[in-house]
Length: 320
Ligand code: BT5
Image (tube, protein in one colour):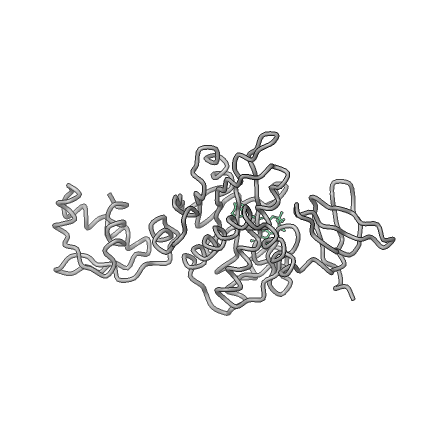
């Protein structure tokens, strides 16, 4: 019942609705309406009460289904939003529902208790960040799955650059950096058979309103609020990222060269001396290019070029 009242208050933003009307249309007592309103207030909804009834005058910055959807003007990304106060991992949940979910479904949580990075690493996900996963169903072979990751990186970089005027760079393979510090990480996981991609789950973690000193990595991570010196609106950030992700996922199918070019232009890695760690060991060289499938081309000191499909990359000094 509380959910129903929440929906109505958001729909009738700025307008009074009488308690009697609410009670009658929902078939409950006025005391039950009051109880639901009180619990919404406790959740952060600023609902006024007077003789004229109840009124919500501002949309709270809460990652809730109707609030996120209310701010979106997309065709398929975010048509379905599944919002949880807390989840172990939005990627795990999106993978669970991935096969049957409609394309563009978003899973979001205010807190993750078992947020994941690549290779089962831990992803610190306290309240104040944006932790969400989007289910995409691009018509590409599994061998091109990294393109989804590239498109998502470009989308996040566009969103952060556009909203906050930050100088945002992409570090291969999946980090979004500001002042050489990690502000966001992306984890794309796929469900596929041998020759076709069933679905891709794009997990996006953005350190939004988080004290930088509480982040892992001893000063090598940052947050938007730390960079700007003020907090930002999470719903606005989510909306912008989802809008850019829809654009990029369309480009993924129609004009991948554009995504590739923009990734390269925003890259913090190309032109840098790097140390690469893969399952086969470690080596250094200069990152010279990114191929169409997202593999990093690294030139070793002897001139040999290695194609790195998966691994970790540490930026060493900028190259001359
Ligand atoms: C990533 O992995 O950067 C991908 C992170 C994806 C997180 C999102 S949140 C929504 C969705 N649901 C999930 O469960 N995951 C996705 P990787 O490149 O492996 O980086 C992981 C490393 O980053 C860790 O080993 C830490 O050193 C560091 N780290 C952990 N939490 C961090 C944070 N909040 N900010 C910056 N660095 C962090």
